[in-house]
Amino acid sequence: MLEGFLVGLKKRAEKSIIQGTLANAMTSKIVQNQRKTEKNIEVECSTIKEKMNDVSVNLGEAVKGQFGDKVRKSIEIQSEKINELHEKR
Image 1 (cartoon, rainbow, N blue to C red):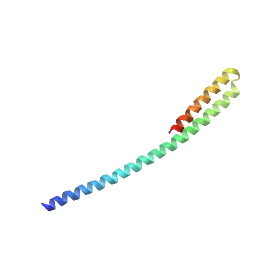
Image 2 (spheres, helix red, strand yellow):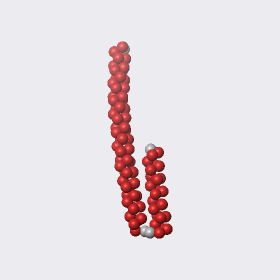
Image 3 (cartoon, rainbow, N blue to C red):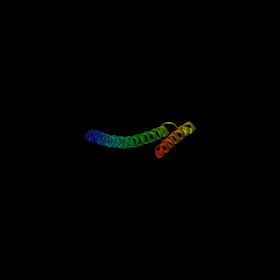
Image 4 (cartoon, rainbow, N blue to C red):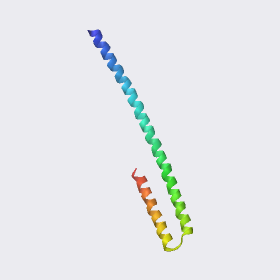
């Protein structure tokens, strides 16, 4: 009877060790994925900002007058929104 209890206790202890090991591995993988995602977001935000600046400059050279000013202003507003979204993270 005592032997059966000890075997059951040993099995439960082994299950706990395995579950703990798996939980740690999963947590580590989640953290790695979060870091990778944050890095990718950082790169994409920088790329978007650069492209929007390029578009603004090119439009500034191509489109003159009041319409060109409105387009550049619109691009500036969108660029600011991207910055705000990026900073909220």
